[in-house]
Length: 112
Image (tube, rainbow, N blue to C red; front, side, top):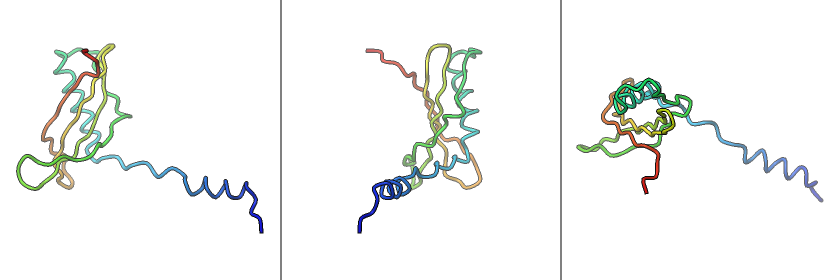
């Protein structure tokens, strides 16, 4: 019995369909707001500072400095005029709360 190639291809495409998008972190909206504040602070309140809320993503966890807990890390891209930045905001894993524990801002450039 021969199986038509089209049937095999359809079965493979169906089996390898992309997985559902990752759920949005509950603190993503607050992280975007905080990232904008951080970027404006970094630039002496430059009005051209902006964050890209549609590109906010959770990038994993890091170990807490004390104890056995872990923190969630949310990455928020942004820009000021022609310079791009990456902000990472670190939140405690407390259900129902967004407790900011740390933040960093890094310019996306090659100084070398």
